[in-house]
Image (tube, rainbow over all chains, first blue to last red; front, side, top):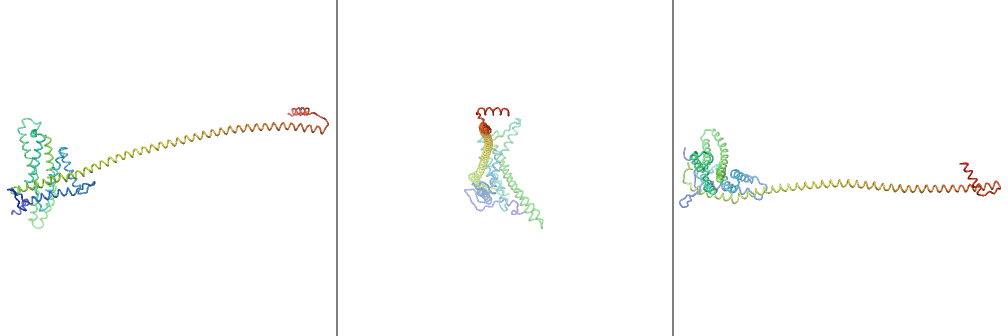
Length: 244
Length: 163
């Protein structure tokens, strides 16, 4: 299979213009365009649908309010009252990932969440932020997070390294989960699309049916992964407040 | 795999920071407070309406209670009034009746006295006339000159024999 027909070709980054600052290449690319579109869609939707003077919401405003309440509820369920000040951050993460995934579902649109560097950067922000928060709240006692109470003492030499590793692997698991899901989904769609073209006569309709079904599944996954990203962020924030 | 090509890592990180920071600040400062205010305003309005409804209901209950009290009061007043006026009327009737009875008694007494008097009068007149007639008759049929005392005693004796 030639490189230009590869199912992974959709993930290639195409720069629209060459921009360099110092030694760093910060060209505006199709990935950057997707991010800009995502941010514009979110900000415009959440601003234009909401009429601050309305007592009874319109249907569009109801969607914005549902999103707001959804994340507010999620945050208060997992973190409690402490979580209120992180609401804008969790909401932004959720909307950025969700709409980024959804923009990626539009044909010919680039999916920036399918790039490990992007998801890892987002996960790192969460990880570093939560770690700082833990040290701010508990100081040096934050290290007791790795010490599990109620376990026989001879188990600790085994458990503490496991806990440390699992803590340090949080940004990796968080980013790889989103990246792998988007990568696999879009690759699968492309593979089936290749079958539609390659199959003889009308048998190509069969993979087409699969594509339609998989598109539905992908939209579900797009939402689900954004939700998982948000809920794990909430849980990590909660851990920074309540050590075990 | 294009994801592992570090050529555009810096560009992607740069644009991620730019777009995500913009999104975070915009939502934090503008969009989320707007939605939050709308929700808060609606909740406050609903609570206010509920409180007002409760207050109005209490007021309505109070008004109903006062209406019932007034009705009760009016009923008892009316029955009292009826009772009072009927007893007053009865008393008045009684008084009138006794007055009339007294007056009638007086009148009856007076009349019976009158009757007695006139009867006695007429009786005495009849006596005189009888005496006169007897005297006249005696003078016509005889020539006796009889004194009046004799006539009277004669008549009295004859009356005694009649009776």
